Length: 55
Image 1 (cartoon, one colour):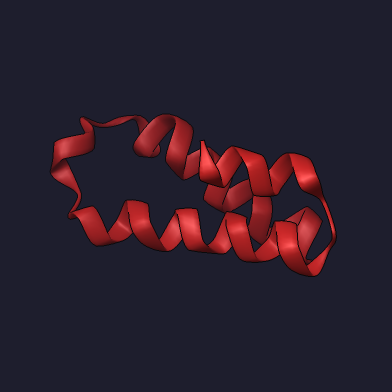
Image 2 (cartoon, rainbow, N blue to C red; image 1 turned 45 degrees about the horizontal axis):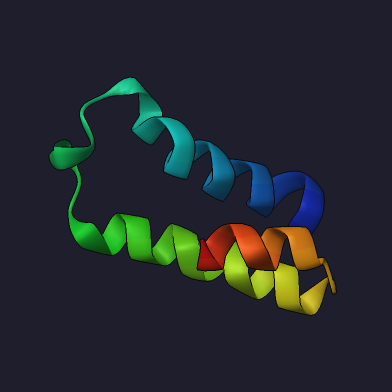
């Protein structure tokens, strides 16, 4: 569920910001998505997702 539901949502938001200007969102939205991707990388032992969040 983490890899097929939550990760795609967080990744999509970080890449596209739902198709609007990134400044329309508060910084907390990006931070929450980054934390979600980082946590999913740790829990699922996926180094690629972990590195994506760190980068």
